Image 1 (cartoon, one colour):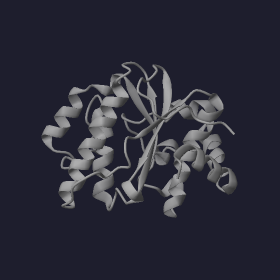
Image 2: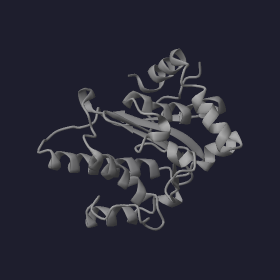
Image 3: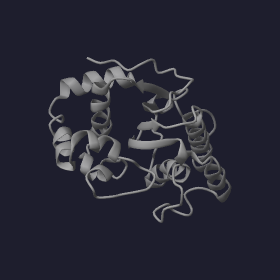
Image 4: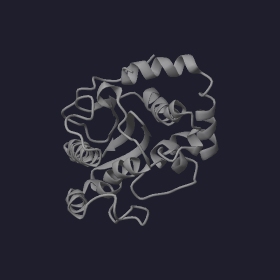
Amino acid sequence: MLMPSRNAIKDYVSDSFYHIYNRGVEKRKIFLDERDYAVFLSYFKVALSERIDEDIENEALSVVEEARLRRLNLHKDIELVAYCLVPNHFHLLIYQKGNPQAITELMRSTMSGYVRYFNKRYNRVGSLFQGRYKASLIDEEAYLWHISRYIHLNSLDKKTEPEQDEHSSYQYYIGKKSAEWLHPERILEMHGSIKEYTDFVEDYKDQKEILDEIKHQLANY
């Protein structure tokens, strides 16, 4: 079974894929309702879009926060390839194009901004996430093949089929949605067609032993 590279990465390599993940401190929920999911995802929509898409809610982020994210111009340096948000954790697949600090800038802005939002909304203080986010360099093609499928099958943890999950990138993979800030084509090109990719995901649903093993190795859950 393939193992990811060390996840305590400080220097990011250009032209490389990274699996990024974290969960709530003490396994607590970090998304309590639809607005929480929308706000968290809006950090990526704004930071990774050259223009602001119409589907980004005007009230999701403050004007100041949105302007700060747009000044980063991160769409030139990194791409969000896949994601799945679960009540107590999240998974991202990111492709690093240039600027080795881009991932750090994106995740620092997202994590700190979301904690400020969450704590203010729910009248709480202190840490929300379990330490620093983890980032695993994907340096083997076989691991890259598996990781997007693993991410999308996290929907099953919510008792939700991947194609019905509104908090996952899978609907973008199967053609139900499209967006400037998400790039499923990097994975879909490896499979040849949407049908081949959906079969690839469907075939894995019943392999619970392998799923559990990969989940343990990648996320230490």
